[in-house]
Structures are given as structure tokens and as C-alpha cells.
Amino acid sequence: MAMVDGRLSALDMSFLCLENTASPMHLGAVAVFHPAESVSPDELVALLAQRASRVPRMRRKIGPAGLGGAAWSEDPVFNARNHIFHHRLEAGGRDDLAALVSDLMTAPLDRNRPLWQLHLVSGLAGGRFALLAKMHHALCDGQGAVGIGLGLLDGGDLLADEPPQAPRSAPSALSTLARQGAELITRPEHVVGDVVGRAGRMFDIASAIVGQMRAPAPTPLLAPPSGTRRAAFVSLETRELQRIRRKHGGTLNDLLLAVVAGALRHWLLGHDRPVDVLRALIPASQRLRSGGSDDANQLSAYLLDLPVGEADPARRLSLVREAMDRNKAAGPNRGAGAIPVLAGLLPSALNRLAAPFAAHAAPLLFDIVVTSVPLPPLPLHLNGARLEELYPIAPLASGHALAIGLSRYRDGVHIGLYADGAALPDMEKLTEALPLALADLDA
Image (tube, rainbow, N blue to C red; front, top):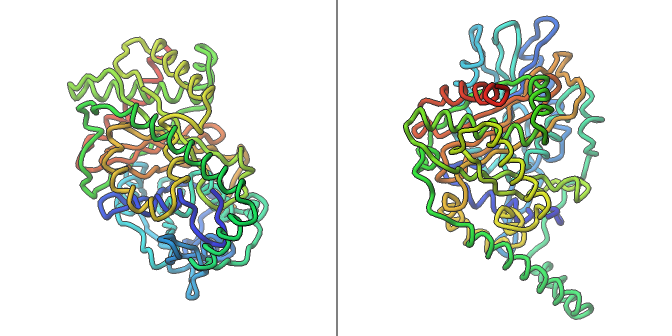
């Protein structure tokens, strides 16, 4: 799913087509820094603008291309300062920061400009400051956003590993048809084999998706989009998580998914809405498989039944671990979870037609998105200030009311909850349930 001659990949195009005013398709991350001494917000804004100008992807905007597609091109009037904003809180805590982030993440990004914003938030308790990075999913996936973010930090040229690139223009529809026609004449067996193979993969994934559709459970997690957003942040200690993981076995990711299931169980019982199973979409990065050199989204996903009806926490973890083992054995390119793979196989014009159907069908397939965004285990700094926490924010699929992002960094696992504000007005109860669910597993 590489970007060829500047054109958006089919998967990138699908994220553009899925967007509407009530369900914008941008993702985000909130990084909290602790400086050794007071810092000047104006100095930080200037530094971020200087570094953003050196990142090729941050200088590009989207324009139309032939055959119903779209392409990246250099913005001729690009000015990084137009994308960077400063906000000040008065001795703000985590809840104050979350409230500001909720407001800032609500509005869609302007498609006439490069699809990103940076929001510097000063005035946090203890002299800390935060940086909200807001980027359209067409620009990058979670791992790609990490790469862009690393390019903004101290030593970013070495961390991001993204050499400067000359902008590439999109080919015309005529030149694309000419190239494809020439290949059909010179290598017909290759073209036919490729078409048949793609069609077979599309049929297999589409059949699995249809087979897994079900009547959604009546939960607050599925609701018409209101256009409002709420964010909340929770941190868990890596040391405690690893101790409990050793007690039960499995991976840290299995444990975190079981903690999410337990927290949802606590929260749903508090609503007097018992549910046996909630189905989660678990995005899976493909960058290690492909070498990770392309700018485009490189994603697949798994479907995972979260056993929220299971009262025994250890049994709940065991069920999660067994299901994830089956997913990993089957691989990320098969099954009903491989929705991004299917989107990447469709021509761009078909993505435009399929997007409304996909948006309506998504609640029939899964109830919640739970994504993990790993960070390198290195000390990271911005203008000398130490990175302490990083909370991922996953976009909300249409008709869904909650997405959960997990990020492990050094001493903590940082959890970003992002919800429809009308559907989940009591999200603080869900944040309180996360450490309770971990304690259940330790009991």
C-alpha cells in the first residue's frame, strides 16, 4: 500500500471517504513534558515550527488526481506557524488538560491545507507542558504518527529516520492508463495473475466480514454520532502490570486487553446493562512486515471478543489470551478483522462508493476500537524537557461511542479514552474502572 508517484494509497483514500462533519477521521496524541526549568511558550512554538518545516509529510496537502483518486503535493504557501497554536491553563491538572483536548479534537481538519495541527498547552501543574498532535488518518497511521512526532523532538533527525524527499506529482489518468495498458501487452500473464489474486483475497476477506456480522448488543458504546467529544487519560505502572502478567502468563498486550474488558464490565454493570461479549477491533501495524519505509497507512486488524460477561478475572484473561493466540496464528491478512487490507485492495473510486456502506456496517461488526501504539524505550525530550507521558487518541468510527488507545513508555502504560460526548457523559467512571480491573486480576 505504498504511495506511488504522490497518489494516496487506496487505504489512505478510504480514511478520507469515511469522514463526515460528525465523525472526523483524525487521530491524535497528547505528550506531557517535564522541563528542568521554566520554558518560553513562544520559544517552543518557534522550535516546533522550524522542525515541522523539515518533515516532508507535514508540508504536503491533498489534491484531486485522475480516476477518482487523490494525491499529495507540496503546499506552495506552507507556513508551519499556521498549524501551531498555544493555549495556557492556570495550574491545570490531568482533567483540565483532557477537557481542552476534547474541545480541540472536535473540529475536522481543513482539507485545503496540510492535514495536521500542533497545540502547545502550558500552565500544567508542576511546571509541565503538553503537546497535542492532531493528524488526519489519511496522513499516517499510529506508527507513522510516532515517526512524525519523533522528528519534532530533540535529535529528531536521527530518531525519525525520514530523509528529506522531493515532492512527487501525481500522474494523470491518461498516463496511468497508458502504463497499465503497456504492461497488459508486454506481461499479460503477470497482470491477469495479479488481478485474479487480488480478487480472491478481496472475496475471502469480504466473505469473512459478512459471516461475522451480527446484531449489535444494546450498549451505550453504539450510538448515532453527536459531533461532540470527550477525552480522558489514565496511567498504569509498568512494573505492576509486568508483575501481574508473570503471575498469570501471556503477553503484556493480552493483560491490557483483559484490563479493558474488566473495566468495561465494571462500567456496564454500573449502568445496569449486563452484556456477555463486546467485540473489539484491534489494529495491527504491517510496517515490520513491509520494512516500514512507505509514508502510507500500513494496517490490518484483528477482531477480538472481549468477555465482559465473565465474572472471574483470571478466566477473562485466559479467554482473551486464547483468542489473541488464534488471531496471531491466522495472521493479520485474513479474516473479518482485515478490513484495512480489503480497503487497500479496492480502487480509489470504489472506496468512495463503499465508504457510506462501510460506515453503516461497522457497528454490525465491532463495538469498540482498542489500539496499541508503542514508543521506543529511549529517553525523549523536547527543548530539553523530558517526555513523561504519551496518551494516544484513536478516531471514532461512525456509530461508535468509544475508542481506547494504549501506549507503553518506560515506567508506565498510558491510556487515552476518546468518546462521543453525548453517548458517554460519565466517562470518569470508566477511567476509575481501569485500575479496579487491574486490581481484580491481582486479587
